[in-house]
Image: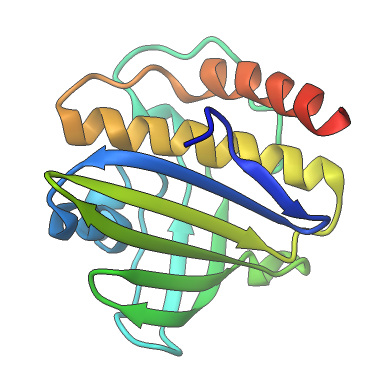
Length: 177
């Protein structure tokens, strides 16, 4: 697996990670508000195709450590994104539209595969409108998934924004090449 995600085409990024299992626990971290709120955002996901998705972001709550970095994206704290479930195949596939309320709807798909006592998570985010968004989304997913991996492993995650800003710079350089 690559250290960073990769650009599949001019509107699509993919990130793959091995996480501690079992697969049912990782699925719960994708679908249950309380668990998802530990690494991404709280909010309900209706468990069916056509169901509503709410993502309430509060990056300061993702680590008990203080974060001295200021938000550098339009997905700062107290941001809410709405979407619609487009695939719901527990515990293997979940997809939904992202940010329907912002006017630039994209779609994210999570795929899980059990590999021994680990789980391969593949995130594919499509229909991203421009390179600035692609860089931010790539860095965001990498940072959020690192926090999920820490939560699953029982490790205290690092504060979101400090990690995100470093990873964002790496993606700016990677995608400029």
